[in-house]
Image 1 (cartoon, rainbow, N blue to C red):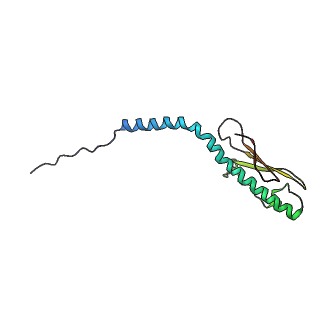
Image 2: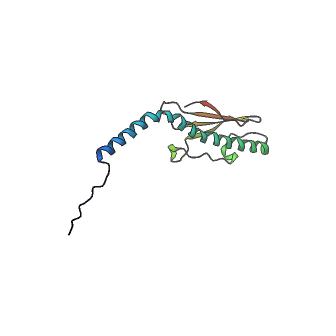
Image 3: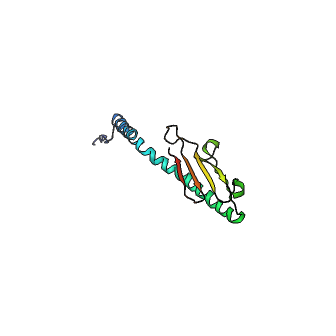
Length: 136
């Protein structure tokens, strides 16, 4: 009768795995600063979309009432809850001015996306084109 010897399985040892993880971590630390502007641009899309919605609602309100409104409830617009209030929105929204012929609304970031102490600000007027006022 012949004895069967256990065969050795090829695998990585713990030191090799830790070395690979350390290299991946270092590469991520090098690459992360390059991705921060892209993250800020992506989050700014929220402000642009919401401001465009406010602009469309202001236009509809003006067609019905011959003036723009300062009040979101008159527009039937409910601003999303910010991350500071348990929501998911990164911006707070307000109407700065409204008259018979023009309006201006603003989106102010409640989160500093890149940690430099500057908060992103966008504005929109009756022309419907969002403009970045303060770049984060």
